[in-house]
Image (cartoon, rainbow, N blue to C red; front, side):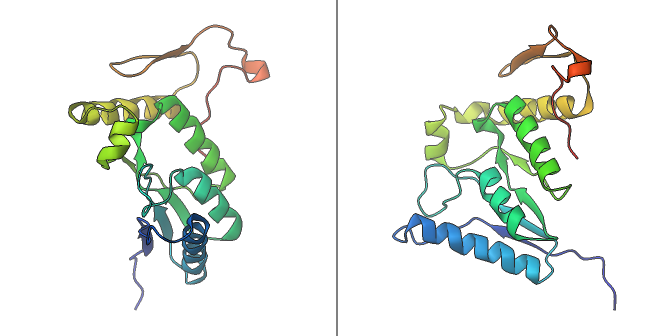
Length: 177
């Protein structure tokens, strides 16, 4: 019987904090490879900065490595913790990663929830929702429009209006694959 159900693996990942860091990373990479070999559709990893048992501080770097070791599986950060990042950087990095993967990138946005991560990035809990909503707006605006760019929000204020040279490719931000 045929089915349209897709299978994926979300990895927090949670490890014994006494394990060597490199061993944790290698185990998670092996899991991603195994998921690809088994025919899983998606592989997702979380983002945590101040937790030794959830060890992936940069899903993009980790998943970049996974891309080179897998053939078919779609990959994704889950979530990209938007409260911690400049959304212009996020839009460019994810668009680049989508091209690097030849379109195998899935994206999930979220706020981040580890209290010590919030503290490390100087994010006050009452502003998280507003930060995330604004960041999503910035990212989708960048992906949907061409220069000139201008965005003025509560947390993000950027513009590219001058020095744009389309012929030389200067001033345009990257779009997904």
